[in-house]
Image (tube, rainbow, N blue to C red):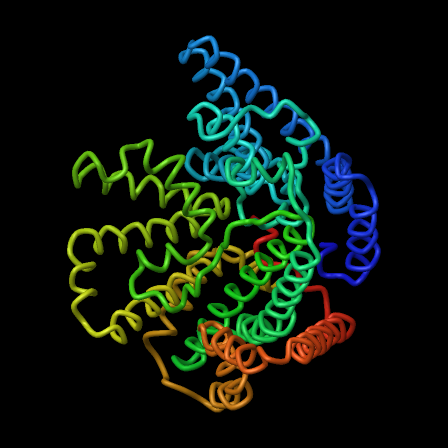
Length: 483
């Protein structure tokens, strides 16, 4: 994907940013829409028409909803919302789940239906959810109808967060779409946030991802307990710094253009329960499912039995949203069961025990969950795993984590070679770096020029280091591009 190359950074971003600030403010949404469509066409030219269809369809559905509400015809307004939801889910299911459905039909009934083998449109899981939120928000009265097609198109196709989120709901940036202030301080803050995200991806996620890929390339049935846990920890850190890095880059780019996207991560590995973890991890997705599915289903307002049903539905779909495979459904149901147990009795117990134990409990189940998740896409990580059953691979790996030889020379080698990196990853996933940065700024408060100069030097050095790694490294896309 273009985001991993210097060509993208220098041939796309720089001209777009420059042109954006040159044109009059009334044309800035048009510039962003045009840039976003070029960005999308660069990655998947044929699916540009799908993006345009999504923009047009949801735009007119929003107008339809607003028109029927003005006429106080809520029945027809609900029909308009339903048309939008059906359209968005139809294109998502067709492109993402058609082959999964056909494969399961063939397995169940012994048929030989031909698979479509369609390439997955980049970012379709994200922009379909964003598009759906617009007519729903208009129906609920949380947002006004958008009369300008260019402005609405900018919202759907906005390239900073188009590919892997965060999922931006229409109501959260409605005012910003219609008019936003762009200041030097905002641009500087956006650049800093972008570089922080780039460092997370290039320096941390890619570095520890190499270890995970190396372990996957070995005979999984021969792994020792220590090697299996080292690998699980490696993927645990890789997916966090990879995805949160992209989110930081998206938030930073959005800020450069005057947008303020909501945060998508809040130190999830500091969580003290699974419930707390999902308040901190991929916040935009969990918020979307809560507001547009869990609460409409009744949430926790209709008794414990209905709440348990709702949690099972929401988390099965959350897992399925991540990928067309049973591994993802099991991953979602795994979290559903843990959340149900917490709602029933664990939550009160976790509040009473020392925080260290509740934290270790959370980390244990989160790390195990990432093993289930990882093998849903193992074929994309290592070619030798592509033809193997993800569920069987998961079982083999989990078995290695809890049984067999404790360690061998290879596991000790991994531990010695990556010990410093693991320490850095642990520290970087906590608030400590932010605390240290704030203390440094506080000490330099009387010398703003010096503080600014040091900040710029660190920023430039970090960016240069990332560029050096990119030039010297191999193609390594963001993990969430495939969702």
